[in-house]
Amino acid sequence: MTASTRLHQSATLRLSDGTTISLIGTDTRCPVCGSHDKNNLWVQIDEFEIRACAACQTLHLTPLPNPQALSFMYNTHYYKDAGLSHGYLDYRVEQSSIERTYQARLEKIHRVVEHFYPDGFAHVHEIGSALGFGLPIAERIFKARITASDISEEAVEACRGLGYETFKSDELGRATAAPLSIADLVYSFDVIEHLTNIPMFVDWLASFIRPGGFFCVTTPDMQHPLNRILHSRSPSIKVPQHVIYFTDYTLSKALSNHFRLIRSFWDFQILSLGSLVSRLLHILGLPPQGGNFGPAVPIYNGMKLYLFERI
Image (cartoon, rainbow, N blue to C red; front, top):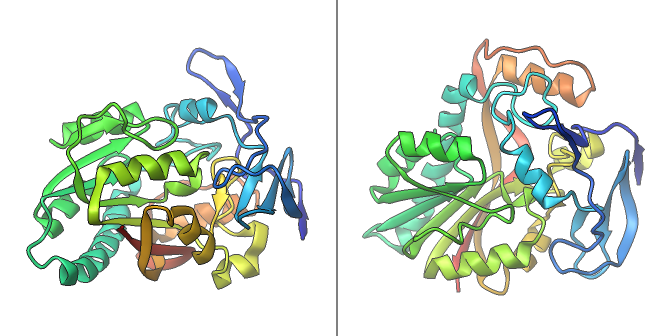
């Protein structure tokens, strides 16, 4: 166990009308299995604890943040946040690096799935599409109909502006109101760790992906050497945004009612030197220094890319 008192991001959110709301909830259930029983404390971060569920072993934040308040957060200056209180320093400035990260991830997925379905896919969907930088890349690689969903209104409008059919998702990651046809492949990068009810998300996801189709996800792996060494200082620990901290075992178990794991890979992000410096300063509790300057390089980030098959 490690003790810590510094919150990685703010526990309060100031809305555009000046109202301040708390992100701290009261729900102590496990977001994966619903149990209220916990094992030993993994780390204490201000009002929050990260503990392992006694029933399913998943590390998670307790109490869970208020999901409705989190929805407000993703719709309030999330893509340009000068203080890194909740979102990105400047998401648009990092477009080139983000595109290169998408390219590497999607090419890796394609190399695996093309052996299962050499004729390709008809419909590919991204959950958590952000400002849509990866959608043209997915279209080039998969040569399929590309659709998207996101919780952020700004993100939805940005993706629609690029010409893609895009829908608003709820705080549980589901685009339940969208008239979406069944997908062959769904990918979701850096999203599942933000969700507060995995069974509801997975049930919806299973209804959306055809049997034999694929779900690809990136998320922190808490058995990754970087996370084991850095512990609460790891970039994977982002409180209160990141609700769940998976391992290969706990993620596979969380999806096991509808999906089976096919492959997993260590993940990396392409980051400019300026972006990397800002993130390191933030981890150390120092003010971030803006800029997308310097060369862009692949950085292992304590995450894995997982490919699941719908069963």
